[in-house]
Length: 180
Image 1 (cartoon, rainbow, N blue to C red):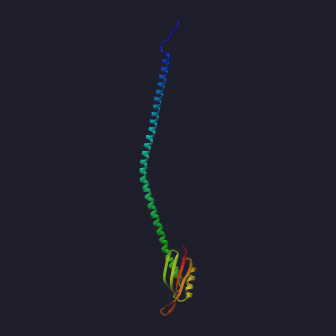
Image 2: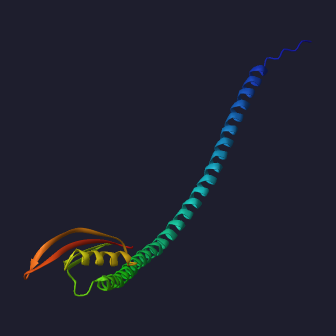
Image 3: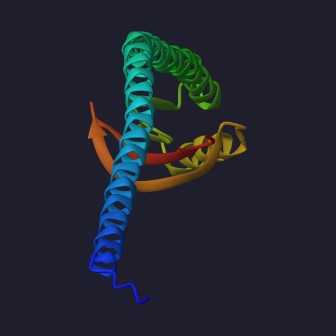
């Protein structure tokens, strides 16, 4: 005999396949969500660890900022002291240099024949002005200055005759370049 199946088996199979696909989709979606949450929690944990590390480093930086500030102050004071020492050394050298220059000028003077009226020292240049009995005395003074180890060059700026108390004398101006 012929049996006829009146039950909708094909429709059930189709519905079962659709239900299976929907359940697989939801399970996949649920698995995807669980995976994303797990990754999110892992990343959140790393971020919070990095933030904690950043806070520690900022606190350490704040403590070290005070130390850096103190180091800067000490370096600045050290630099100031060094410049003061250099200035003192320069003054000491200048003090003895001036005395040496004066001594050399006095040593080169022709006694009782030449008198200085003015002496001006600016850097490495010495300007002298004075009165001499004659041009030969001025020339002798210049030769003696040129022979000095402290001078590089002696230059006669000008000479002129001048009457002082009835005597005819030579007034002169010299410029002396000194050795540094």
